[in-house]
Amino acid sequence: MWSETTVSTKNKYLYGTFTWSLDSPVYTFDKNSVVGLFTYADNDHELDIEISRWQEDINSQLWYTVQPGLIKGNKYSYSIPSSTNGTNTKYRIK
View 1 (cartoon, one colour):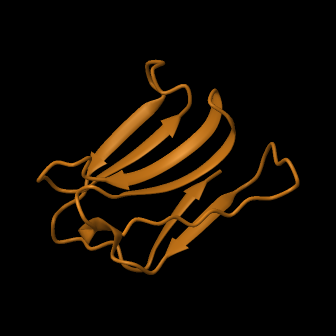
View 2 (cartoon, helix red, strand yellow):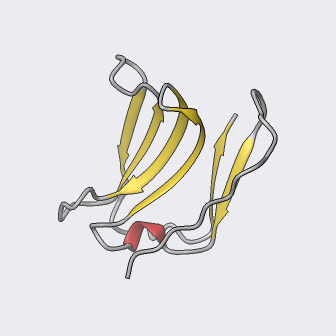
């Protein structure tokens, strides 16, 4: 079963610090899952933090993207060591 949780606001925030605290072992999730933490105005104004294996049998990947992601320098990825489970982690966009 797949599900999602969405938190949204009626206010529009242009600047600030956005922090997510995760208490789940996100780096051990199924290879078909994606944990997405992001701010979104539209497809060209979005900041993403994504954790996934993108359906591959590899270590989880941690992605930071400023949309549009096709622009050089707007996307960075990191391989997460298999010994890291991701429990009690914090992610921040400033």
